[in-house]
Amino acid sequence: PHLVADDIPDFIRAVEADTSMGEVVRIGILFTLLTLARTNETRFARWDEFDLEARLWTVPASRMKMGRTHIVPLSNQVMALLERLRPFTGQYDYLFVTCANNRPMSENAMLYALYRIGYQRKITIHGLRGTGSTFLNEAGFRGEVIETALAHREKNAIRGAYNHALYLEERRHMLQWYADHLDVLRSGAQVIPINRKRA
Picture 1 (cartoon, rainbow, N blue to C red):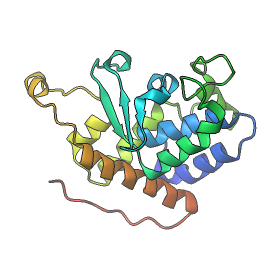
Picture 2 (cartoon, one colour):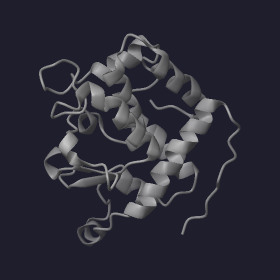
Picture 3 (cartoon, one colour):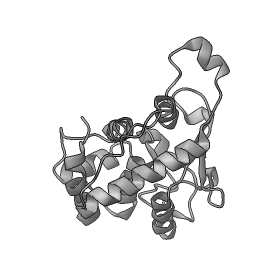
Picture 4 (cartoon, rainbow, N blue to C red):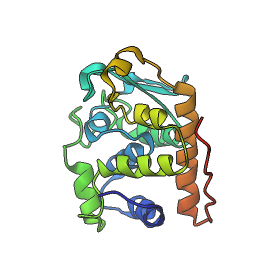
């Protein structure tokens, strides 16, 4: 299950307003939504994987489902989340530590937080990737750029063996558009579809 545009404002407001989940879990959910990361990519994210000057997160191949290093451009909103998070976990190896033991938060910490705010069977953490994919496809961004952002393997094995394009600048623009778009939805403003033409 994933969210549609009409669901987004109430969802983000509910995450931001809840007092039971704690700031680290809250930021983890929003970070996952904005980066299109898998749950474990978020859970095991380490501060030393982030180049804040270049605004890039490099996830090593050893932690990726497809076994390939994944580079994520960081939007303005994600940079702001990292600044919010640093006072809580900046002294640890992992970003999303929920207690002072330098270990990542539990596998279900974010999911159970969604249950507590009324989203059981409505959305999963993994479903946030579906939300992002749907938005970006409907906006007309190129399919291969979206698939790269989701760290999916190229379906054509021969093409995949030779296509090592990272589309970094396109993905940077796309993820910034997505983050801005979510902000607009949360603010309650009317959204006019872009209907970008595919290159």
